[in-house]
Image 1 (cartoon, rainbow, N blue to C red):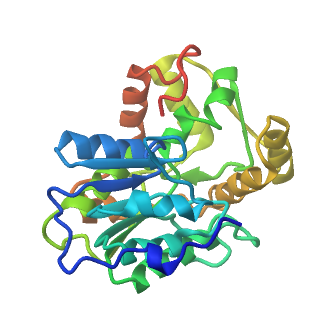
Image 2: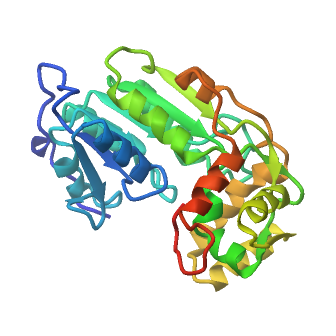
Length: 308
């Protein structure tokens, strides 16, 4: 286990709220699907950004608490992408508040408050729900984002390589999902991190796209725009996990992916949520718009890698 940090190493909160204009916003997970888009939007509107990752200029490791203070000290707000394989969000929230961070936006997941949503083991939901509880119990201004399945999973791993090979094997049967464009998530996150008024404070936004699509229908939309043909092959959960492990994925990570896919198979991801409309005052971006933009960026060209 990482060494415990002495309470004396934690600076007391400032007596005044952080300056949301001049103090930087911390993006934890700043190189991931949502984090890099949040970072780009913050930079575009002139907000100072501190990107934290295990290998970046600001080193941050969820499993090494000695890296947390340097990342959190002096920031006005933080965007938190939790670590699925370890329940560390609560500890981070408490440290952030101790260091004077006054606004927190947490990336959670749709369905975490529904028993059995991710199967009997609930591997994908327990950590998110605990993180949400820690956020609500804190003294920080908070916003929780609960997106469903990302549209961008089709242009990034672990979906991208199988699609390029022409066959996407998933344990989703003929279930459908209202895939959410990650650009919508990033836009809401930035609004919640930077808006001067309290519009988004204390809000939990459940986020989805505007219409349900099966995996086969999603692949057909990609084919219609790009000409690249790929088919969906339904497989069992056990085979899906075994195939991911055979490809080099850690068993725990493969099990989390399988658990997260179960709501599609069970028809739970097909509903349309109102979070984008509540947060932004408009309808969510359509899957076709995502495919068009991703294709223009070279998403499904064999020579391009992970443009999602």
